[in-house]
Length: 258
Image (tube, rainbow, N blue to C red):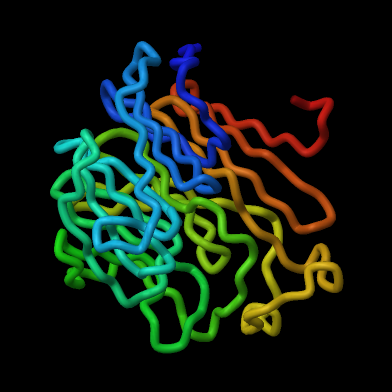
């Protein structure tokens, strides 16, 4: 446990990113980024809410560049990435036109972007853009015929400074490992069910009406030793844990199994 600096007021912790000697907490509700060192000392607090060119309206997602330690914030209201130094200086703003659900920064300063939901005419799947927002490469595609969207959790997770994990959407039950120059399908997920084709083509699903016929995944997390995620078919839930060191897996469907 690391006790954080008690002189800094932290509202909600929506996401935590760790990189070498830095711990970053994101409070999306209050629009703040809290930067701490490994001793728990407060290094900086970002609060750049506003409508100026160097400010953001909201924090839709964020990440830290593992090399430069710059903070990258995606403002969904402005469709822009705002880049700040670790000391809080605004470095640049990058406009993007596509809908972005989740992103991570690769070690070569390229952006890895994932969007599972269907928006006609917009990019969809997993792709990369360069540090100026220019499209580079599509890594995974999603068919236009597959329009089902469950929840929109965090799909991308930083495993270490060089490797990003992706829990792909319900069109492709797999977990990928991505670096600046490779993408590898690491795990195939078998949830024991398939969403009916008729429902795969529905953009908006009445979950109450289709309990048990559709499912969604969430809470993906991975470290060097563990991988876990949750899944629900809206009738029942499961939590899956994989011990990568000892090659053992655990599936929890009832509270007493924890």
